[in-house]
Amino acid sequence: MPVSNEDVSPQRSPFFTKIMGGGDIPARAPWRQILLAWTGGFLAIAVVAYLADFSNTALVLGSFGATCVLVFGFPDSPFSQPRNIVAGHFISSFVGLCVLTLLGNEWWCVALAVGTAIAFMQITRTVHPPAGSNPVIVMLTEPAWQFLITPTLIGALLLVLVAVVFNNLSKGRSYPKYW
Image (tube, rainbow, N blue to C red; front, top):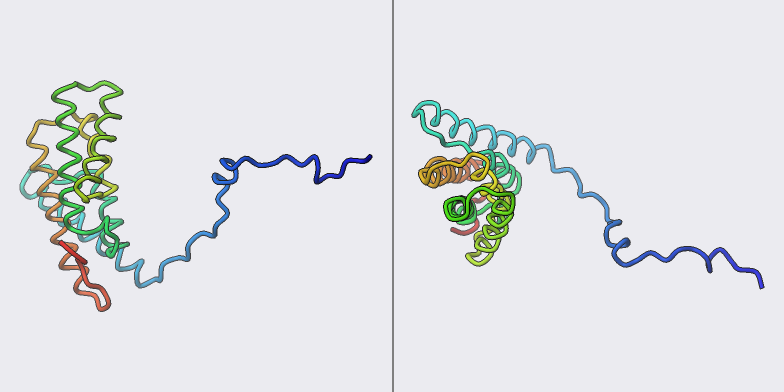
């Protein structure tokens, strides 16, 4: 009895099917939204960088660029709200500093710090994805505990201040959704 092609075709595993995706990419944001996101990100980092330069104080973290993507590109997201920005950055830097102080700077310490920061942000309902990189920044730079205040806390507060002012200047935007 002949075998049909259907009988010999390989079956895909559920895992393979899941990783193939299959959905469509989202639509591009409207030009107005893109311009607002660009302007907000530019202004926020400009303010923080200028104040850092003017005061000769470290106020800029690499993760703040990703914070700007969220707060100006997706201001309604729970990840973009002030409590998530400030507490998320603070908790993640704190966890990184604790792991660095107590356990040192080994490869597994970086992993432990990131995983622990994620867990603490989830426990406190202050998840802010860009802050997940703060423990990595801590391990790479090995800063003093002052890192919690500058750049982490003051820089995050400055970003929120710019976001509150900028996002409320535009018609149709109301920020934040909650504190």
